[in-house]
Length: 224
Image (cartoon, rainbow, N blue to C red):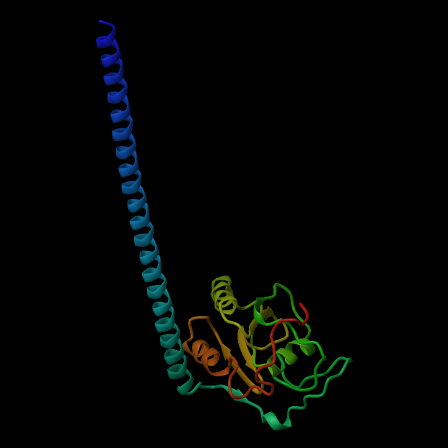
């Protein structure tokens, strides 16, 4: 009887060890499956992100190319009733005194050594001519308006300026037209923001060929 009990005990221990081994094998197998699944999912997600990034970069490149093509087409079109001053006759000395300009807003001439920040900046109040002219020298387009301009037009133009580096906007009560656009040696008067000449003016003169100092910054200056 004692022998039988020992035999049964040993058999039970053997069965327990077998179950433990099977449990470990199953656990290891499941772990391997989980790890393989995670690795596969991770690889899939990395591939998806990589493909999405490539598509985004390709889309941006196409958008940029399309934008440049559209800008080139607009810049090639004439701007009716645009006023032009001889760029060579517009002086460019740096002065620290006030300057009396022959046109309002001014499109060139002597100006303050500090340029007005013009990286898509919309100023709520009038800005000094002497600083704004320096921004024009760097290739900026300056949008100005008086009390005759509608709130809708002002808002539309402000959105355009905010999305356009090398442009700025401010009220200018001394000007003749409701809305005026100025660049170095160039100026245009329009009645509304929907005038197609607005887009042509931006396309032609934002960092355009008229810029006396191409490559000069529109940041790091003064804020009115």
